Length: 259
Image 1 (cartoon, rainbow, N blue to C red):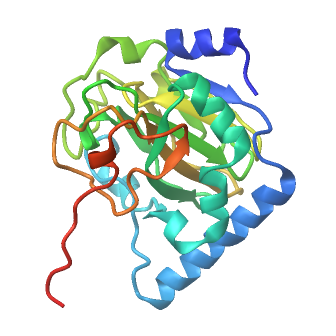
Image 2 (image 1 turned 180 degrees about the vertical axis):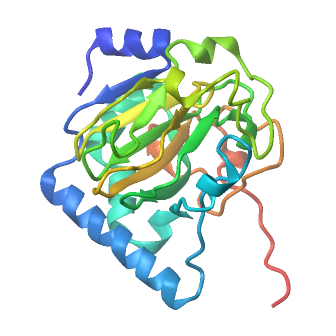
């Protein structure tokens, strides 16, 4: 699905927007999955506001903002499992990461109309650091995203700077890295924005009358080892492309306790 020129663009800039990865029918199925997850979370009284907290916005403004965010969507709805291993995704990932690719985790991010929360500029690296930095995010757009409803913004080439000092819950100093410094990445439903976990990115609040729904899949090379014991998931290691070269390290070792 992508050319050599696009692969080179990703390597140089740390991000790549690919148009039309998912069909209208697949997008509609995932929209339904998002709504069902939100409904079940509300029924389970787990429908909390996941908006980021911190000093990057005035407190009076911050408390008005809302974000619906849940991890591990492929455990909740089968449509997301199909999306994770979709042939189009596999074709792209095999070019951006390499012949062997596995899943690290999934999540959904929903910015409701008029008060959808902002994301301060940050790198994903502090949340799940790895040795070889093959980790990337694939942000699947389920709605048209533009500057009005808080589309993603990136700083091209910032992945080459390596890990940067973060503050609070792992975001960059907003005075040094304002959201406005990022290049907007408008996208249509079905498009996917791929970016390295060292690429500086963020997004402004949704001030429009339109919802902005995304699901995000994190992938990496299975030979890329974590450097800290953080963000370990039951499903980490699901193979999407190729194979895992290490027979004895194909899944995390968990123990069920308290049963």
